[in-house]
Length: 130
Image (cartoon, rainbow, N blue to C red; front, side, top):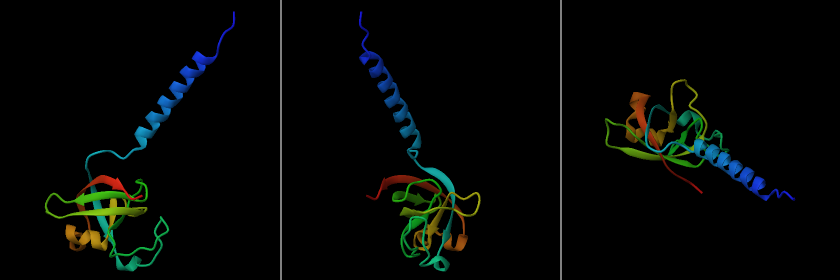
């Protein structure tokens, strides 16, 4: 009587693929919008390298986020204002505790963050730059 390993190998392979799928799904950004505290950074960082390696330009619609991959596109809005901006993650941060995102000056301006300094915003991942 010969025993074949094919059924056992197949079962192990399926379990392995299911585990990898579960890990991949957990690492995806959540769908829907999340409320976070936002701040902004501007001219004093002009030309300095970001964590992604590109130079910071306060006129670009970019942001710093602690966990989202570089190139992630995020829509940012405030509940008390009609404006929305789309920013691209190109830096790590925020540096100050309790904040979820640091916006470039150009992205912060239409949201009224320049004068306020910080505010609660809604952030939603909408895509990725290839």
